[in-house]
Length: 282
Image (cartoon, rainbow, N blue to C red):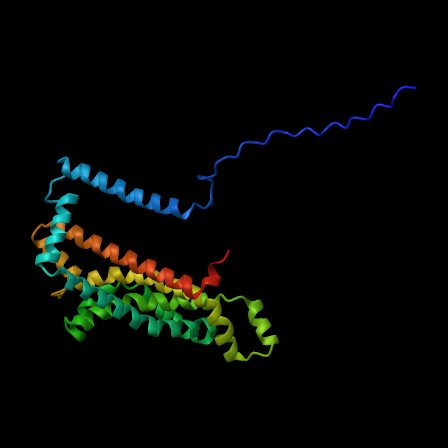
């Protein structure tokens, strides 16, 4: 009697895994924080290298464009001999003063316009009209009304910011989810409760981002305000340097404006993440 041979069960064949494709250039594919910083820094390095190539190589006259080395030397002179730090302080004070004044008025008005359609119908035509008026066009009138002192410069920034903030906040508040509003009514909330407990908390992160965006615009207005009738500030320094054909100081002043604006933007963004961390969770 022959022994029964055990049945052999063949193992399933496994197909070779397909190679993992790199997706660094895929649409909407996120990059790491380290890669983001490296790529951002690389652009500045390339930009300065191209700038140095054309200026130090003699392709562009120093009268029209100073080299990075000349710009750095002129910047050092501004700080050590011409008290440029005071000009920076005055410019920051004007931006902060005008922006805070605009936010104090625009944010409550924008919330009221977004929440109550009657208020929106009353204010929106005028605010939409003023939003397209350049802030620089008001400078002659502001000089007549407020002189050439600090009030005139702060008002230029205020006018350039207040109408933008108002409309953007109104749109944000007015775009609240209707289901949340109806749910709040169902739970017994009144009209005031809808505004204070639903509309404002829901719109707060977007309102903060609106303020961060308009703060960047405020930096463009302050230079316009300082170009006329000013004895201090970064814009005043740029005007004086232009009359002397000192492009090194002009470029240095522009770079300082960009650096201060970049730092303030990062600080505002970090504050928004800290205050409204829940809104950035995906």
